Length: 203
Length: 200
Image 1 (cartoon, each protein chain N blue to C red):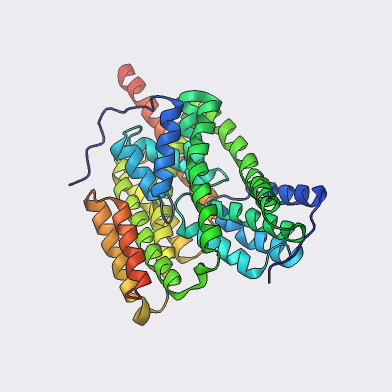
Image 2 (cartoon, rainbow over the protein chains, first blue to last red; image 1 turned 90 degrees about the vertical axis):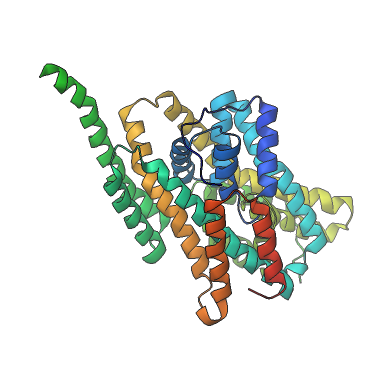
């Protein structure tokens, strides 16, 4: 029932078809956004990546322009199978859901104004907020090995949360402002760690 | 009433250029550029009616898959409006498909090319200290942003006396997903059902 340990062996997608099919299935199950499902499927079920790797890749997918989950599919596909893999990942993420969305548009173009449909959207929205929160909570364990140390990580996280969630600053500012702070501090810490063994040898 | 349009190659090219220019601005999801799309498609060119615009967004959110598909639905509707003066049937379908292609290629191509090139480079140089620092430094921020997203989604319902069942639903979902491996579709389905019945 509980979250699994992170040190499990990591699989990889077998082929471009595997990528395409996996992302198609993933996208088709992702009502109200795909993000929560991406973490569960890629990390916990397929084990294509560890939690740490997921957080790293998610950071990149988030900071690059474009839809986050599509960016992630593009990055993973590109890493294993180059440009063709990237295209397979993106196509998997978009093709089948596009067909479903268009069919829905043709069938129910006018329904979305009905009271029950609005209610269903409200309910699904509340659930997807919970899904995203749960992913955030799960990923906290990925900070354990972070070279900045846990207290600094918590401080940076708190600052970002306040900036976006409470002060309502634009996302780009927070990514840039807090991001530069975090990356610089991580750089200093990594440099220090690299210097440490050398110093010990000298002593 | 939906607009009846006559769009030429120059118009389609203009739409492509507009979406392509928004593509690189869409940090944190394309939905952040929706206000500008509204300005362009509804206020400026009148290619979409207000209803078509909002229902494109609502429908993409209700459908499975990435929310970026709302852009495809907007393209679809522009195509339908452009075909309205040419009779229906296959012409309609073809114009709608053209609209989807123009809108999606516009919004996806620039950002995808940039992401692909940048991440390939970063992966080849992943042992560089700067790259490792970037990943380590961004990790706590990214996690906080997930929590902030959930928080903001909840805050859109801001009348506690009416909306408290929604808050309860969100908290319950969080606990269930965090602590169990129950399939998420059950939760989404339950949320949709409770909402449709008017219980939350």
